[in-house]
Length: 94
Image (tube, rainbow, N blue to C red):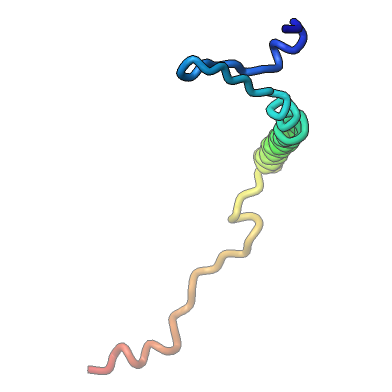
């Protein structure tokens, strides 16, 4: 048998009968389906990793801005104590 053909076959012996199955369909399936799918998955992982990195940088910039300019909720929002509720009348009902 040719040496170039031997690696492309899967050989077995069942009850003394030699069976050989060509594995070229496995290689074709791998090259047509599996490899492009994994390339897309690797690209997707790179994109998601980049987005997580950008989010971390953005959050650190926000924290740095807040700390540098000492922005606190008390300075940003006008906080006033709540006034007494007008509709408290029904709570005094027996």
